[in-house]
Length: 334
Ligand code: GH3
Ligand code: MG
Ligand code: MG
Ligand code: MG
Image (cartoon, rainbow, N blue to C red):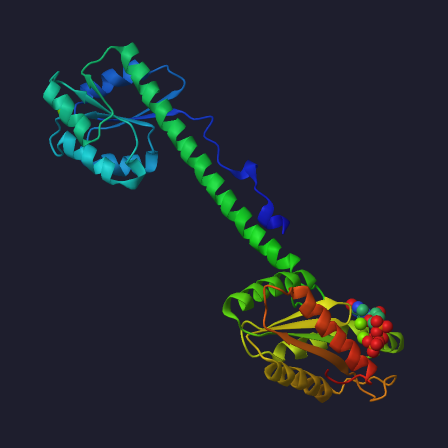
Protein backbone atom coordinates (compact mmCIF):
# COMPACT_ATOMS: atom_id res chain seq x y z
CA UNK A 1 0.00 0.00 0.00
CA UNK A 2 2.65 2.47 1.06
CA UNK A 3 4.47 1.77 -2.21
CA UNK A 4 1.55 3.01 -4.21
CA UNK A 5 1.05 6.04 -2.03
CA UNK A 6 4.68 7.14 -1.83
CA UNK A 7 5.30 10.02 -4.18
CA UNK A 8 9.03 10.46 -4.16
CA UNK A 9 9.71 14.12 -4.77
CA UNK A 10 13.47 13.65 -4.51
CA UNK A 11 13.70 11.38 -7.53
CA UNK A 12 12.07 13.95 -9.79
CA UNK A 13 14.72 15.41 -12.13
CA UNK A 14 15.46 19.00 -11.33
CA UNK A 15 15.81 21.78 -13.87
CA UNK A 16 16.84 24.43 -11.38
CA UNK A 17 20.60 24.50 -12.09
CA UNK A 18 20.33 24.80 -15.81
CA UNK A 19 22.73 26.39 -18.28
CA UNK A 20 21.67 28.36 -21.29
CA UNK A 21 22.68 26.04 -24.15
CA UNK A 22 22.95 28.02 -27.36
CA UNK A 23 23.09 26.26 -30.73
CA UNK A 24 24.09 28.56 -33.58
CA UNK A 25 23.33 27.35 -37.11
CA UNK A 26 25.11 29.54 -39.62
CA UNK A 27 27.16 28.63 -42.70
CA UNK A 28 29.65 31.49 -42.22
CA UNK A 29 32.50 30.89 -39.82
CA UNK A 30 33.06 34.59 -39.46
CA UNK A 31 29.57 34.92 -37.96
CA UNK A 32 30.22 31.91 -35.74
CA UNK A 33 33.37 33.57 -34.42
CA UNK A 34 31.63 36.88 -33.86
CA UNK A 35 28.77 35.30 -31.90
CA UNK A 36 31.19 33.11 -29.96
CA UNK A 37 33.05 36.23 -28.85
CA UNK A 38 29.82 37.95 -27.80
CA UNK A 39 28.79 35.01 -25.62
CA UNK A 40 32.26 34.25 -24.29
CA UNK A 41 32.89 34.76 -20.60
CA UNK A 42 29.21 34.39 -19.66
CA UNK A 43 29.21 31.65 -17.01
CA UNK A 44 25.59 30.66 -17.52
CA UNK A 45 25.95 30.24 -21.29
CA UNK A 46 27.33 27.28 -23.27
CA UNK A 47 28.01 27.93 -26.92
CA UNK A 48 27.65 25.27 -29.63
CA UNK A 49 27.48 25.72 -33.38
CA UNK A 50 27.30 24.06 -36.75
CA UNK A 51 27.97 25.51 -40.17
CA UNK A 52 26.13 22.64 -41.83
CA UNK A 53 22.36 23.11 -41.58
CA UNK A 54 21.82 19.48 -42.64
CA UNK A 55 23.31 18.41 -39.29
CA UNK A 56 21.36 20.90 -37.21
CA UNK A 57 18.55 18.60 -36.12
CA UNK A 58 20.89 15.71 -35.23
CA UNK A 59 23.01 18.05 -33.14
CA UNK A 60 19.93 19.47 -31.45
CA UNK A 61 18.78 15.91 -30.68
CA UNK A 62 21.88 15.22 -28.62
CA UNK A 63 22.46 18.74 -27.32
CA UNK A 64 18.88 19.67 -26.34
CA UNK A 65 19.60 23.40 -26.72
CA UNK A 66 17.59 25.90 -24.69
CA UNK A 67 17.78 28.38 -27.54
CA UNK A 68 18.67 28.16 -31.24
CA UNK A 69 20.22 31.02 -33.21
CA UNK A 70 19.64 30.43 -36.86
CA UNK A 71 20.69 31.92 -40.14
CA UNK A 72 18.17 32.23 -43.00
CA UNK A 73 20.36 31.94 -46.09
CA UNK A 74 22.46 28.80 -46.16
CA UNK A 75 23.74 26.73 -49.08
CA UNK A 76 22.03 23.37 -48.47
CA UNK A 77 18.89 24.11 -46.47
CA UNK A 78 16.57 27.08 -46.64
CA UNK A 79 16.38 28.73 -43.19
CA UNK A 80 12.58 28.86 -43.17
CA UNK A 81 12.47 25.21 -44.12
CA UNK A 82 14.84 24.36 -41.26
CA UNK A 83 12.56 26.16 -38.77
CA UNK A 84 9.63 24.11 -40.09
CA UNK A 85 11.63 20.91 -39.66
CA UNK A 86 12.52 21.80 -36.07
CA UNK A 87 8.87 22.48 -35.34
CA UNK A 88 7.86 19.15 -36.83
CA UNK A 89 10.15 17.28 -34.39
CA UNK A 90 8.44 16.62 -31.09
CA UNK A 91 11.67 17.24 -29.17
CA UNK A 92 12.18 20.69 -30.70
CA UNK A 93 8.62 21.79 -31.33
CA UNK A 94 8.89 24.45 -28.64
CA UNK A 95 12.61 25.28 -28.40
CA UNK A 96 13.04 29.03 -28.90
CA UNK A 97 14.45 29.89 -32.34
CA UNK A 98 15.97 33.32 -32.87
CA UNK A 99 16.52 34.11 -36.54
CA UNK A 100 19.86 35.78 -37.28
CA UNK A 101 19.39 37.36 -40.67
CA UNK A 102 21.54 39.67 -42.76
CA UNK A 103 18.43 41.51 -43.89
CA UNK A 104 16.20 43.92 -42.06
CA UNK A 105 13.05 43.16 -44.03
CA UNK A 106 9.52 43.13 -42.50
CA UNK A 107 8.35 40.48 -44.98
CA UNK A 108 11.16 38.11 -44.01
CA UNK A 109 10.47 38.79 -40.34
CA UNK A 110 6.77 38.11 -40.77
CA UNK A 111 7.48 34.91 -42.66
CA UNK A 112 9.98 33.79 -40.03
CA UNK A 113 7.38 34.21 -37.27
CA UNK A 114 4.77 32.54 -39.45
CA UNK A 115 6.84 29.35 -39.80
CA UNK A 116 7.57 29.22 -36.06
CA UNK A 117 10.47 31.51 -35.14
CA UNK A 118 10.29 33.23 -31.75
CA UNK A 119 12.45 36.24 -32.52
CA UNK A 120 14.36 37.95 -35.31
CA UNK A 121 17.69 39.77 -35.07
CA UNK A 122 19.68 41.42 -37.79
CA UNK A 123 23.35 40.47 -38.08
CA UNK A 124 25.37 41.43 -36.30
CA UNK A 125 23.28 42.41 -33.29
CA UNK A 126 24.51 44.41 -30.35
CA UNK A 127 26.14 42.12 -27.78
CA UNK A 128 23.99 43.21 -24.84
CA UNK A 129 20.82 42.86 -26.84
CA UNK A 130 21.84 39.39 -28.04
CA UNK A 131 22.60 38.28 -24.47
CA UNK A 132 19.33 39.71 -23.20
CA UNK A 133 17.26 37.98 -25.87
CA UNK A 134 19.09 34.68 -25.53
CA UNK A 135 18.53 34.69 -21.76
CA UNK A 136 14.95 35.87 -22.06
CA UNK A 137 13.94 33.10 -24.48
CA UNK A 138 15.95 30.47 -22.68
CA UNK A 139 14.31 31.32 -19.33
CA UNK A 140 10.86 31.25 -20.87
CA UNK A 141 11.64 27.83 -22.35
CA UNK A 142 12.95 26.42 -19.07
CA UNK A 143 9.93 27.78 -17.20
CA UNK A 144 7.68 26.07 -19.69
CA UNK A 145 9.56 22.77 -19.32
CA UNK A 146 9.32 23.01 -15.55
CA UNK A 147 5.62 23.72 -15.73
CA UNK A 148 5.11 20.75 -18.05
CA UNK A 149 7.15 18.53 -15.79
CA UNK A 150 5.25 19.63 -12.70
CA UNK A 151 2.00 19.03 -14.51
CA UNK A 152 3.04 15.52 -15.59
CA UNK A 153 4.21 14.75 -12.07
CA UNK A 154 0.91 15.97 -10.67
CA UNK A 155 -1.09 13.94 -13.15
CA UNK A 156 0.94 10.80 -12.43
CA UNK A 157 0.51 11.39 -8.71
CA UNK A 158 -3.21 11.78 -9.13
CA UNK A 159 -3.37 8.57 -11.13
CA UNK A 160 -1.38 6.72 -8.47
CA UNK A 161 -3.60 8.10 -5.76
CA UNK A 162 -6.74 7.10 -7.63
CA UNK A 163 -5.38 3.58 -8.12
CA UNK A 164 -4.46 3.41 -4.43
CA UNK A 165 -7.96 4.52 -3.52
CA UNK A 166 -9.52 1.82 -5.66
CA UNK A 167 -7.23 -0.71 -3.98
CA UNK A 168 -8.14 0.66 -0.56
CA UNK A 169 -11.84 0.49 -1.31
CA UNK A 170 -11.44 -3.16 -2.30
CA UNK A 171 -9.45 -3.96 0.83
CA UNK A 172 -11.87 -2.25 3.19
CA UNK A 173 -14.68 -4.42 1.80
CA UNK A 174 -12.76 -7.71 2.06
CA UNK A 175 -12.58 -10.21 4.88
CA UNK A 176 -8.87 -10.91 5.45
CA UNK A 177 -9.32 -14.50 6.62
CA UNK A 178 -11.51 -15.88 3.86
CA UNK A 179 -10.91 -13.37 1.06
CA UNK A 180 -14.64 -12.93 0.45
CA UNK A 181 -16.60 -9.71 1.01
CA UNK A 182 -17.04 -8.53 4.58
CA UNK A 183 -19.94 -7.01 6.48
CA UNK A 184 -19.35 -3.63 4.85
CA UNK A 185 -19.60 -5.21 1.42
CA UNK A 186 -22.77 -6.96 2.53
CA UNK A 187 -24.41 -3.75 3.77
CA UNK A 188 -23.48 -1.79 0.64
CA UNK A 189 -24.61 -4.51 -1.74
CA UNK A 190 -27.85 -5.27 0.04
CA UNK A 191 -28.93 -1.60 -0.07
CA UNK A 192 -28.12 -1.40 -3.80
CA UNK A 193 -29.91 -4.66 -4.59
CA UNK A 194 -32.88 -3.61 -2.49
CA UNK A 195 -33.15 -0.41 -4.53
CA UNK A 196 -32.73 -2.33 -7.77
CA UNK A 197 -35.47 -4.76 -6.71
CA UNK A 198 -37.76 -1.82 -5.96
CA UNK A 199 -37.17 -0.37 -9.41
CA UNK A 200 -37.46 -3.64 -11.31
CA UNK A 201 -40.07 -5.23 -8.99
CA UNK A 202 -38.04 -8.44 -8.88
CA UNK A 203 -37.68 -10.73 -5.84
CA UNK A 204 -34.56 -10.49 -3.71
CA UNK A 205 -33.46 -13.46 -1.61
CA UNK A 206 -31.20 -13.54 1.40
CA UNK A 207 -29.56 -16.57 3.01
CA UNK A 208 -28.16 -16.29 6.51
CA UNK A 209 -25.73 -19.13 7.14
CA UNK A 210 -24.29 -20.15 10.52
CA UNK A 211 -21.86 -22.98 11.19
CA UNK A 212 -23.23 -25.42 13.75
CA UNK A 213 -21.49 -26.13 17.06
CA UNK A 214 -18.53 -24.09 16.00
CA UNK A 215 -17.52 -23.07 19.50
CA UNK A 216 -17.08 -26.76 20.29
CA UNK A 217 -15.09 -27.20 17.06
CA UNK A 218 -12.70 -24.43 18.10
CA UNK A 219 -12.43 -25.76 21.62
CA UNK A 220 -11.64 -29.24 20.41
CA UNK A 221 -9.48 -28.68 17.32
CA UNK A 222 -8.00 -25.29 18.18
CA UNK A 223 -8.41 -21.83 16.71
CA UNK A 224 -6.10 -22.31 13.68
CA UNK A 225 -8.09 -25.40 12.63
CA UNK A 226 -11.24 -23.33 13.16
CA UNK A 227 -9.86 -20.68 10.83
CA UNK A 228 -9.11 -23.27 8.19
CA UNK A 229 -12.65 -24.68 8.48
CA UNK A 230 -14.10 -21.19 8.01
CA UNK A 231 -12.01 -20.78 4.86
CA UNK A 232 -13.37 -24.06 3.54
CA UNK A 233 -16.94 -23.02 4.31
CA UNK A 234 -16.39 -19.69 2.52
CA UNK A 235 -14.98 -21.55 -0.49
CA UNK A 236 -17.93 -23.95 -0.60
CA UNK A 237 -20.44 -21.10 -0.44
CA UNK A 238 -18.61 -19.15 -3.15
CA UNK A 239 -18.25 -22.17 -5.41
CA UNK A 240 -21.95 -22.81 -5.17
CA UNK A 241 -23.03 -19.47 -6.64
CA UNK A 242 -23.87 -19.41 -10.33
CA UNK A 243 -24.80 -15.87 -11.30
CA UNK A 244 -22.37 -12.94 -11.37
CA UNK A 245 -24.73 -10.79 -9.27
CA UNK A 246 -24.91 -13.39 -6.47
CA UNK A 247 -22.74 -12.44 -3.52
CA UNK A 248 -21.44 -14.33 -0.51
CA UNK A 249 -20.03 -12.34 2.39
CA UNK A 250 -18.76 -13.06 5.85
CA UNK A 251 -21.39 -11.48 8.04
CA UNK A 252 -19.29 -11.94 11.19
CA UNK A 253 -17.64 -14.75 13.15
CA UNK A 254 -18.90 -18.10 11.77
CA UNK A 255 -21.86 -16.47 10.04
CA UNK A 256 -22.15 -15.87 6.32
CA UNK A 257 -24.77 -14.04 4.28
CA UNK A 258 -25.65 -14.73 0.66
CA UNK A 259 -27.46 -12.14 -1.44
CA UNK A 260 -29.34 -13.52 -4.44
CA UNK A 261 -30.79 -10.76 -6.63
CA UNK A 262 -33.69 -11.56 -8.96
CA UNK A 263 -34.19 -14.89 -7.22
CA UNK A 264 -37.52 -16.22 -5.95
CA UNK A 265 -37.91 -18.43 -2.89
CA UNK A 266 -37.78 -21.69 -4.87
CA UNK A 267 -34.47 -20.63 -6.43
CA UNK A 268 -33.12 -19.52 -3.05
CA UNK A 269 -34.06 -22.88 -1.47
CA UNK A 270 -32.16 -24.70 -4.22
CA UNK A 271 -29.05 -22.65 -3.56
CA UNK A 272 -29.37 -23.29 0.19
CA UNK A 273 -29.78 -27.03 -0.33
CA UNK A 274 -26.73 -27.34 -2.51
CA UNK A 275 -24.75 -25.35 0.08
CA UNK A 276 -25.60 -27.95 2.72
CA UNK A 277 -24.81 -30.79 0.32
CA UNK A 278 -21.48 -29.36 -0.73
CA UNK A 279 -20.38 -28.92 2.88
CA UNK A 280 -21.60 -32.43 3.80
CA UNK A 281 -19.60 -33.74 0.85
CA UNK A 282 -16.40 -32.26 2.33
CA UNK A 283 -16.82 -34.47 5.45
CA UNK A 284 -14.92 -32.11 7.73
CA UNK A 285 -14.54 -34.13 10.93
CA UNK A 286 -16.27 -32.66 13.99
CA UNK A 287 -16.25 -35.27 16.73
CA UNK A 288 -18.15 -32.98 19.12
CA UNK A 289 -21.16 -32.58 16.79
CA UNK A 290 -24.09 -35.04 16.55
CA UNK A 291 -23.36 -35.80 12.86
CA UNK A 292 -19.64 -36.25 13.47
CA UNK A 293 -18.94 -33.75 10.67
CA UNK A 294 -19.14 -29.99 10.30
CA UNK A 295 -22.64 -28.81 9.32
CA UNK A 296 -24.44 -25.54 9.05
CA UNK A 297 -27.89 -24.05 9.36
CA UNK A 298 -29.44 -21.67 6.85
CA UNK A 299 -32.28 -19.17 7.17
CA UNK A 300 -33.84 -18.14 3.87
CA UNK A 301 -36.10 -15.23 3.16
CA UNK A 302 -37.35 -13.74 -0.11
CA UNK A 303 -39.05 -10.40 -0.61
CA UNK A 304 -40.06 -8.22 -3.51
CA UNK A 305 -38.60 -4.91 -2.31
CA UNK A 306 -41.29 -2.41 -1.68
CA UNK A 307 -41.34 1.27 -0.71
CA UNK A 308 -43.26 0.44 2.47
CA UNK A 309 -40.56 -1.99 3.67
CA UNK A 310 -36.83 -1.79 4.33
CA UNK A 311 -33.87 -4.02 3.57
CA UNK A 312 -33.33 -4.39 7.32
CA UNK A 313 -36.63 -6.29 7.50
CA UNK A 314 -35.24 -8.76 4.99
CA UNK A 315 -32.21 -9.30 7.24
CA UNK A 316 -34.42 -9.67 10.31
CA UNK A 317 -36.65 -12.23 8.57
CA UNK A 318 -33.71 -14.31 7.30
CA UNK A 319 -32.19 -14.14 10.80
CA UNK A 320 -35.44 -15.37 12.31
CA UNK A 321 -35.50 -18.26 9.83
CA UNK A 322 -31.93 -19.11 10.80
CA UNK A 323 -32.94 -19.13 14.47
CA UNK A 324 -35.78 -21.50 13.58
CA UNK A 325 -33.37 -23.82 11.75
CA UNK A 326 -31.13 -23.89 14.83
CA UNK A 327 -34.09 -24.51 17.13
CA UNK A 328 -35.34 -27.32 14.90
CA UNK A 329 -32.07 -29.23 15.35
CA UNK A 330 -29.47 -27.55 13.05
CA UNK A 331 -28.02 -28.88 9.76
CA UNK A 332 -31.12 -27.68 7.95
CA UNK A 333 -32.81 -24.90 6.05
CA UNK A 334 -35.76 -22.79 7.22
P1 GH3 B 1 -24.56 -22.87 17.09
O1 GH3 B 1 -24.62 -24.23 16.55
O2 GH3 B 1 -25.73 -22.49 17.89
O3 GH3 B 1 -24.30 -21.86 16.04
O4 GH3 B 1 -23.33 -22.83 18.08
P2 GH3 B 1 -21.92 -22.22 17.85
O5 GH3 B 1 -20.96 -22.83 18.81
O6 GH3 B 1 -21.52 -22.32 16.43
O7 GH3 B 1 -22.18 -20.70 18.14
P3 GH3 B 1 -21.48 -19.71 19.12
O8 GH3 B 1 -21.99 -18.38 18.75
O9 GH3 B 1 -21.67 -20.15 20.55
O10 GH3 B 1 -19.95 -19.78 18.79
C1 GH3 B 1 -19.41 -19.30 17.60
C2 GH3 B 1 -17.96 -19.61 17.63
O11 GH3 B 1 -17.34 -19.19 16.42
C3 GH3 B 1 -17.27 -18.93 18.74
C4 GH3 B 1 -16.07 -18.28 18.12
O12 GH3 B 1 -14.89 -18.54 18.79
C5 GH3 B 1 -16.01 -18.89 16.75
N1 GH3 B 1 -15.44 -17.98 15.78
C6 GH3 B 1 -15.95 -16.81 15.37
N2 GH3 B 1 -15.10 -16.23 14.48
C7 GH3 B 1 -14.04 -17.05 14.34
C8 GH3 B 1 -12.82 -17.01 13.58
O13 GH3 B 1 -12.54 -16.06 12.84
N3 GH3 B 1 -11.98 -18.04 13.70
C9 GH3 B 1 -12.25 -19.09 14.50
N4 GH3 B 1 -11.37 -20.07 14.54
N5 GH3 B 1 -13.35 -19.15 15.24
C10 GH3 B 1 -14.25 -18.15 15.17
MG1 MG C 1 24.24 32.32 -44.43
MG1 MG D 1 -23.19 -17.68 15.25
MG1 MG E 1 -22.68 -21.22 14.99
